[in-house]
Length: 495
Image (cartoon, rainbow, N blue to C red; front, side):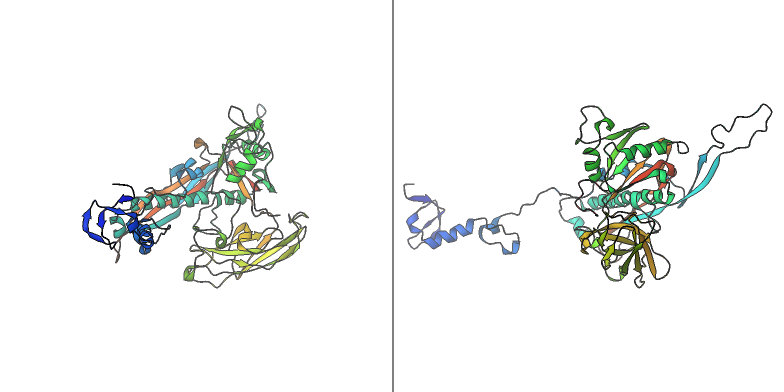
């Protein structure tokens, strides 16, 4: 080679054409004209970030597509099922699971004192038979023969089996907190419904849309109430939302009330709360949230509203304000609000129905009347009632859940909004999880099981995954709740 020449594959003739395939020849740069080099450049460059393979030309057509060999998941994993993982699982012998509880031994403190020859009072323990109903959790999965045969990132059947198990666990985890058989008879009752039904004022604290105290006084008081006379229990665990854990415990709890050694400071993660009745572990759970937005406002990949004949028919809604002694609307809460409602059925939720704006004053109760939609194959069994923030809008994203209520007989269901349930807040649950206490257990008629299904006219492999169970709370005096907690870092505020 000599100056002014570059190596090139075939030699080039005087007319610029290849000379028939000779290799190793040299060519002078002066023999290229501008259009030749421009076309040459375009032919060997990688392209301009095209992604549609049908459009690839030139050098881009020569490139292999690159794909990350790992499936990147942004889904719930086993570590997220905090409550499920802590539950003791025992076997139920029937779909109607009967058990007996003893609530008293008889007598009262000092009742056994007597004179030397006095009549001895008759006493006995107090027993009651309880019944729990096993619920049937099921999901169906199907993988085609073609999908099984082709090369993929993961074993599709194995991946779908794991996902099905996680779907079942998700339902159990959510229902353990918020399930309500009056709203959807197919659900088992969770802690929120059970505590509200028990209605023991000593075991319910109301934060009224505020945060927790800096010494977690609510937890200390409820732990003392559960340990007290007539209950004789021990609170071992707190379950709360991620926001409450971060803003109310980590950022506020006095170091003197933090468990664990080392240099405990405000702002560092808290493992637990010291109480006079033992240490209480704090568990953050992603399935406890600051209430819920309507289905229509939830981002993908949350399932869309059920449509067509499977959808519960959307109701209509109206709200009327008026003074009432039971109201917890104060001057701080007075303002303009909207209400919204979704019908609930086995198939899912109906489209969102909105009320007109309602002006609410201190001491008011808003009577929310839901007029049922025309019944179809999936009759609504309940309704989700939502409320906007004060002086907010009626955009779906501006609503938060107030309550889920059972459908009443007749044409309408009435919900009295006394501001007892504050939208945009979350509950904090206190539970006795000691295995020996058997206060709260997962009772299973059938553990998680894969049940083969048989294809009829499709080349596929379908199956069902099943879990038949319910949450048995045998000792309702060993569970408690702080309701209407608004974490200090909440972006959506009700008032």
